[in-house]
Length: 302
Ligand SMILES: [Zn+2]
Image (tube, rainbow, N blue to C red; front, side, top):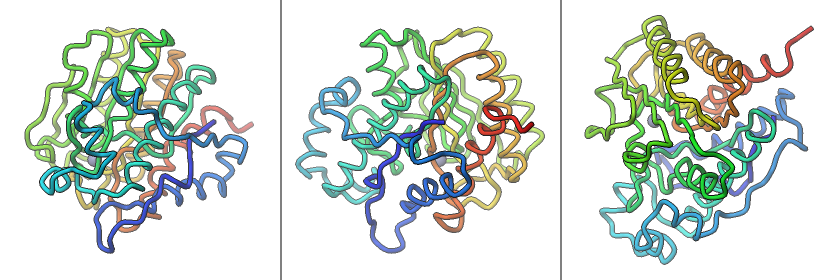
């Protein structure tokens, strides 16, 4: 599987910052070490153009990012300290998602080893999300007529409020979010379909709801591209999630999603979104689940 990745996805953060920035290089190393990708599968993105970012984001917000003139309040809401490197990293990640979307259309499946920053709104960032890569990619692909209709399946434990807001009145984009009802963001924005789950849902109840919801969505909304936000903060013990999925449950989730989408020949783009395990390495290991399950489908063992 081809993936977008660049060492520029990593920028140093202050010590004890809760965002596990180290998960990006750790995941890339892990996928190479396990033979799930080869060096030739890695496509390094450049920084997304400001013109493409303007397809989604407000000029005033982009200016403030470029010049470093966000207010303290805006920076606090974003959850990441502004730096030139952070803005570059965010632009690289957006382009990584755009590139991987084109690769998914060509190859059937592709991934960005970053992205899924679903809390970013047109005019502000929040919840560790600076720019909305999913929305920029969909708008760019629609503009160039590569796709007409897209579906976003967001299984991060936090509701995809930014993405939902951006596509609120766009009938060509179906947004589906399955998340913890009591989790951040405390004010949700309506997706096309939202399923808010109680704390401690666990594997079996989660899988039952996932299967019925996704199958129904795919039946009612034929699409040209499916973007999967495979957040691993649904796992038991995650610092910010409370749904209590086991590792086996995480495998079941990804296996079901991949089989269901690929079985219908819908081009599939996989993105990371959140994950807050004990260490960046463990978080990366959880993110690798999607790739391990994809490898099983793409290269079935003889
Ligand atoms: Zn999350």
